[in-house]
Amino acid sequence: MTARLLLALIASLVVSVAVVLQTVVVPLLPQRIHVRWSLAVSDDRRVRLEQELALTQGTYREQRTWSYVLRDRSPGHIERIIRHPSVEDTHYIDVDALTLTPDDGDRPAWMQAVARSPLFQRAAPWLPAIAIVVGAAGFIAFLPLLRQPGRWLQRHAIAVGRSARVQTAQLTHRCREVAFTSRRWRSSC
Image (cartoon, rainbow, N blue to C red; front, side, top):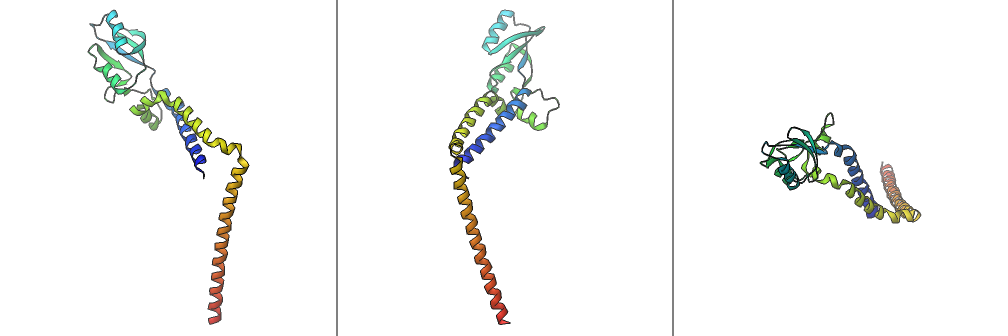
């Protein structure tokens, strides 16, 4: 197998995994988190805190609870939110792992484990870009093979043919040795 073909196969495998993760596991991640502000937080203070903590698209839920889109899913940023003195409580955040809590429902265990992984949660926004770049590299590696499939097939057929001829010659030689040995054995009896 040529290096180009191997690179193309590896690239197609990476793209396939990225597409599966993007379509099956990423939807498990919550798109929004809920934050309940402490009693001491006024509306003006809340607006400043939203900017300070990079909480976007705030939607009022109930009493002091607001729903936000969390663009930065890094553990450091999540920790900043949950440890902030003005934040009373959060929802859709695993405070021990500093990750988002996936909405897993009845999903298989492997999906839940992948969705909870901090590495996956940091890489999830980049999956489409990774798939495009790796797919393009694989296509570029395979392109020469597509332009001249006859030469590529011919080259590999010749290599396979040589290998078959060598194996046939070795087998014929071995058969002759066995036949010669058996004739000598018969003649000695």
